[in-house]
Image (cartoon, rainbow, N blue to C red):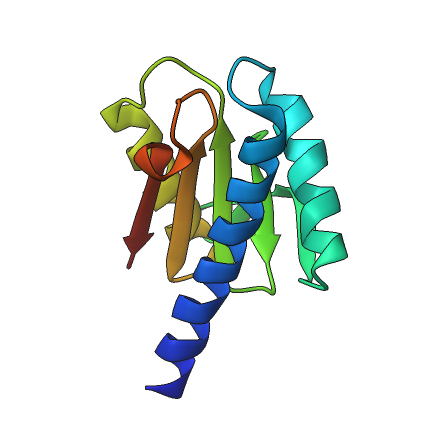
Length: 127
């Protein structure tokens, strides 16, 4: 149970950092700008993360680099996928769920910065 509480607290901290970035920048920038700024905000808050993490595909017991990368893995527990698009589509959630399965992480956040209010652009999924 403690593990789940930690993940919930961690996702709250990540969402707080993303809201701060959105509050300062607003919608309309490229995804890469939000990625750099979120990395900076997570660093300022002392939250451990890796950026642009290669996500290998295991096929018939062979690990293959198929070119997949997730935007962030926070503290080895939470996958974050960023978007700066008009509307999130089911394929974006499917991508997040696939990254969760491939990384072994249980919790994922899909964050679309191209919205007027960021909380309306956040999807949280748990495996």
